[in-house]
Image (tube, rainbow, N blue to C red; front, side):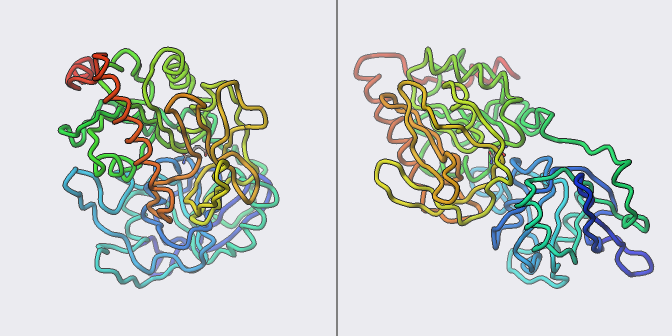
Length: 398
Ligand SMILES: NC(=O)CC[C@H](N)C(=O)O
């Protein structure tokens, strides 16, 4: 059961660096934590969002008022060894803030309550917070550093003496990336190297279910040295500031200069590819997090509803030579994707793999794999060495 004193829940609060305190009661672990307070407008998908490594370092505020009513599923795996209901092997957010926590849950996949799950992972959770007021504040003043306090003294205003920790100063990608290469669906017809900045399980699933063999590589792995073993490169989503990913950007830059392979990036992948191409990033005031973000496809004018969770964006006002905008956000005009004008290289800021969210743009995985298969067929025609075995890439790491 969640933390209680004599069966009544512990008081808890969210203290913001800007001086405000939001009070409520604890329904998770009785621990205090720091993070960047951000809000998501998604209506469903709390198990997926909370296990998405992109949320590492963040205190997640749900604007959907009722959270927890379908409980939390188990760690079941599919035929590829990927988690069916989670995006990684545990909770990644620092803590969660909700308005109304559903103390009773019901769903055929549920094995425990949201409160029990948070407690097991030592993650604090607060309910009874006016999340509408909190969201308006975060929207007006921007994402804000905060501390979740749990316990009898949690309501005391000691903000002036708190040394708030900014998670974005750290290379969070290094924390969540795989330490060793991992292979999924080794018999796939094309071989994709996934640069793991914190890859979601459903991104890997979107590649393997479309026939690809996937090797997940550590974020700083020099994939250029083993590029002949792969037919395409994928750059994943991930937490924190892209400016901390110096090593990964260096490798992508080398790839752009020397490799002739299809590349696809998602979210952090869009930021890193853009930076390697010469663009700058900036921090959005409150970010775009939710499942209803409109992305306009620049060439056709078609608008897709997309799943998003990012705090940074590419400044695309002047595109580098050879590159063009692929998508823009119809709400705030921020960049939603870039594309090379002549090479099969593109990336998007939103999440076409969803989980949660709409699947309007999942077709982009087919576009990428079409690029990869066409490129491979061309290379074979001209007898250029194409991807052989993946074992050698592993051997250097094992
Ligand atoms: N989902 C992601 O990959 C997020 C990218 C980056 N951490 C940002 O917040 O902008």
